[in-house]
Length: 115
Length: 236
Image 1 (spheres, helix red, strand yellow):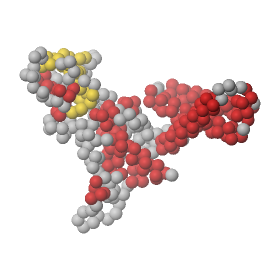
Image 2 (image 1 turned 120 degrees about the vertical axis):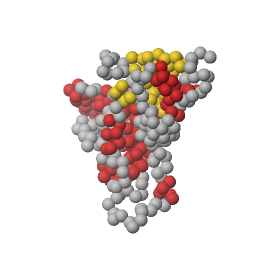
Image 3 (image 1 turned 180 degrees about the horizontal axis):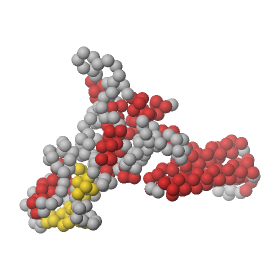
Image 4 (image 1 turned 45 degrees about the horizontal axis):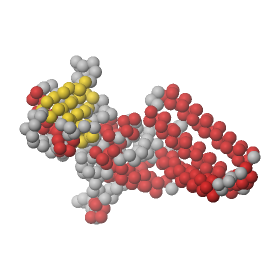
């Protein structure tokens, strides 16, 4: 029996599905942001903060942040299990990655609702 | 016509402190022979050269090796397929421990094969004669049962190199799907539950080295995709 305790969903199937769903969300968010920038060539602070003051944009952004957090956790966890063979080093790096993702996520939420 | 330059991986753990490459000059008399024939010609020059072979016609899967960087069966690979600039480099299958020269320890490969329980399991009472399949049900096994376990695919797979004790590998997964797809097998859900962890199936990144090297032209990547579909259908 192959076990795992530091992977995102504790299951290969759920991680695999989550990786794909989060990739679609991130793709949609990227396309939206790029399109918004292209359609607003003379972007100023008021247009930009106006966009992010809308509830739907905050939900969309938070969804993208959560998707990014999950995507990074799953992807980087895979990289560490492939290349870091020393258990101590691997668990240490995994902990740093997971804590870093947590910090970025909370920071992102604070930026979205703090402005 | 100059002789073929062959560079062969040599390692005898009893006498060599480290592996090295030995150069051979082989006169093929201009014929497009198989790589296995070249190995036999080299063995005439140096009888200590160790390699596995048996049927010499691509059926037994003994002589899988790395020829000019690509895995394949030496017995059915003509020189014209692999030789570049009159040079041929032969190495053992990558990623497995070398016992001697071209002979590798296939223990990890067989362990993963054993793990997927490569035999029919059926908990219903045996019928008087045999368990029947419709032609359509039988068709599902085509492209799966032909595997000869030569290990060319699994040893060309980086996911198997990095995690050979956890990732089943393309050969094992092709066989796993062979039994998942078999209408006579009733252990489908037990088989699937043994595969849903992050390593056994999901360490496959779909780079398709397995498909590129399979000497039988099989497609383990497609089988792995089918296993994922079955896991998803079972769990959602």
